[in-house]
Amino acid sequence: MILPIDIKPEKSLYVIGSKILETLNSESMGIIDIQILYEKLAKNFPEKISFSYFLYALDWLFILGLISINSKSGIERCY
Image (tube, rainbow, N blue to C red; front, side, top):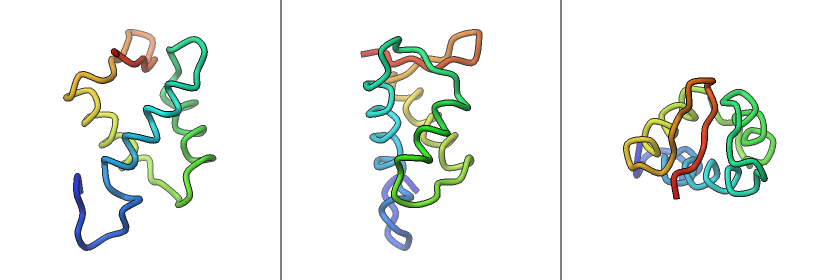
C-alpha cells in the first residue's frame, strides 16, 4: 500500500500523502478540519479516493512527523 505494485499509483500512500501536503500548503491558516481536508482532496484528486485510504495517509504523515492533530480535530503541518 505504501508502494503498491498491483494497484494504481494513485492509491499509494506516497501520492495521497503528497496531495494532502499540497492541500495543507495551500491553506492560509495552516489548520484545517479533517472532513474539510478530505472534501478538498477528493475534489482535486484524479481518482475517487476512499476515506480509509485518506486516513491511512494521515496516519503515515503523522508517523513521519509531517502533520499534527490538534484537540479540535484539526490537521496542521509541522514543517
